[in-house]
Image (cartoon, rainbow, N blue to C red; front, side):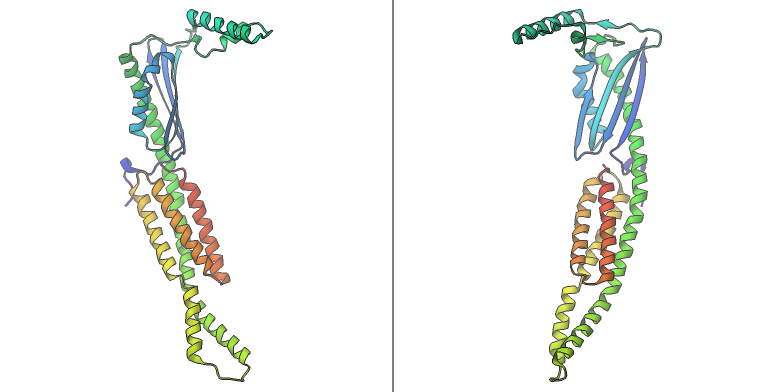
Length: 299
């Protein structure tokens, strides 16, 4: 059963944007996310909204599970109203500090306008003066819109990844079936090969002990037998598909399953001692590695 809209497999990569006007001012929120082991949030807020950072983080944590999140909030003025304000008190204070630093270290270079203007909060354009409650009301509204856009993009990319992953599971299963089909043939060939080598060594000087030969052939067949590994790998493939179809935050579960799948593939390869089986194992491991790379971007 495919995952529902509320429980989709999501990518951790996405972008969302929201806007809202307040008089001649425009508030814009942009949210960018990339893959990350946990939920890591960094933000850039206008000076007048710094006190709302904890609420903004809470809103993001409610909507997103994993990923490195970068959110940028800006105020701009409507087209045609390009007034820019500067903080007189901050400018004077910053200038005095720069002068003190210059004198302390005996720098020859004078403090210039470019040095003062380098302060990030000196100039402001389009930021209205709002009480926290009013500021949060509009910030919450615009951020929610940006998150909705972001989640939609993450959902779409997640669906595209699932469409790529499912056929790869079948490719692995096809190689696994080839290994399973080859296993009985390998045991028979190993017994015949052993019997031929023993006969060549004795060179007709003594009769071959068939019971002893059978025991030794059984030991070889057991060392070469990868039935258990094939069964477990087949089960992991079923679980992988079930997790994808269930949806939700699947990244960590799939990563664990892939570790187990890779372990089984390595064991099958170590028991191979056969060109055709080795070729299938290489195909298995290539597809498992592609799966591993792809699921790193799933939430």
